[in-house]
Image (cartoon, rainbow, N blue to C red):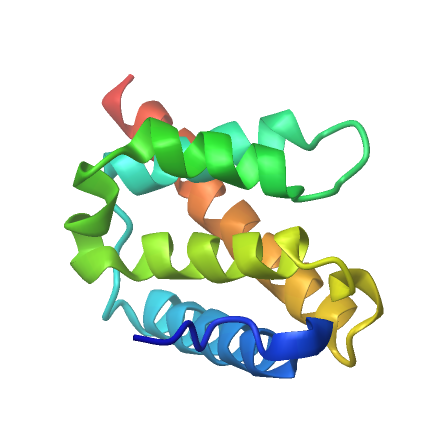
Length: 130
């Protein structure tokens, strides 16, 4: 069994490409209404954004904590799509050369924007209940 998330020798272009693909697909499905993040997904996205509010960095430690907080349930809700996105973000953040990989900054920025959209829906849900 091989790990195809991060290529050998610190060249993580496959992980960056996959993150960009996942982010675009989730963003499109969110816009089209084909994917609607549930309470767990919204809460975890919000938690991750709060953890990174000071420096705006989605670090490996913060992503690991978020994935751990979601535990097994996150891999089942929403077909595990947010879990996959967070896992690819983690792979890039955890790779030693990730910040310098071609497209890594753009992919992380797009993923963060998507997380902000997902987390923002938590507030919408809360306002709707009041």
